Image (tube, rainbow, N blue to C red):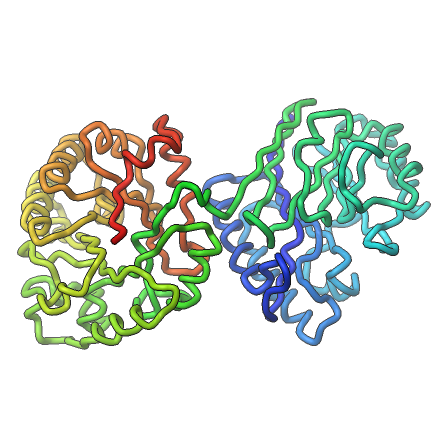
Length: 488
């Protein structure tokens, strides 16, 4: 029997401004960031949300806020259990929006017993006689693992520093121990405590998603063994990471990007800096011309479909505060020239190059040797124009279902080294491989972190980047030597 659970608690979402340490105004973005990380990289069997999903359950907009949070939760690819907290308001209105997990449910041979305990003074709770009887009844005719789920921390007296507990904790914990519950999982106390699962207390208190490093807890149950891992949406500030690839409201492919909000999030996520790097082709041409590569033959000299928004883009970046680096994701035309006017190029601090289209790949039966020859030939001319980083080096192959040969990888790494161009680690709709990263580092090619954000939740989301470097056996102490630094 094995089971991977993720526990998220105390999002405290509100459309109002932040209060004290709670980042309630971005709590929906934090939750969305967590959901995407879970779906793509952590892949739990069960996600448990342990209450205080919204900050004011009795407010005028509370039902609207509940529905908004439920829209995000519904994106999860696994089973979900949602339990209300003391901030969530009326339980009936709560379960009008969120799925009711019932009194108990089973997942992978583990039985979860759900409690919605009455609130008591000083943010404590009590467990009713009926619910204590349910604690006993859950063990009847069942000899598998039992896990108690509730909002207020349920723990053995003396095993946690949490100031919140149950007025009748002696009776409740006695029922827990007599029925040999494997684990108690709670929220409510914002600092949380995920270490108790390793001692006789058998308790996990999930920290608040809306505070500090924006954490949640992964719990792995394998037989009688329980292993916890703390995840944080915030990046380690001491690493001084910079997101060199963030899009803006000017992108045709933007989902909700706004410069001021992206900058705010970059600071909240612990970044040392951020660059807006909009598609140059999207700033110079209309959407139809861009998406159909109508400017690629003549490059910046193309007249049809011209729609110059470059000056507005540059002005908007310079107007935001705190300042962001002024950048472009510069398209490479079919002749290897940058799709940017010289007078605009002078204002660009971060020059991220990209190759989105390869002519030979458009053919019904492309010759892969010619594809590689075309790509490397164009890039050799392109890099000489002052490109600092190559964005998502092999995405054009993934988009066309083409394989990447080891010979191409080796030649591209050699070209990057010769031209002193960094290689971007990028996980937006693609995967950067460990083989490519190792080849770059071993050859002395610097790496650059880019989120390629088209949605605010992606800004500075470098969890997969750091996990990839860990897979390659590079630690935090190696980053100064591995990563490019274009800060001015």
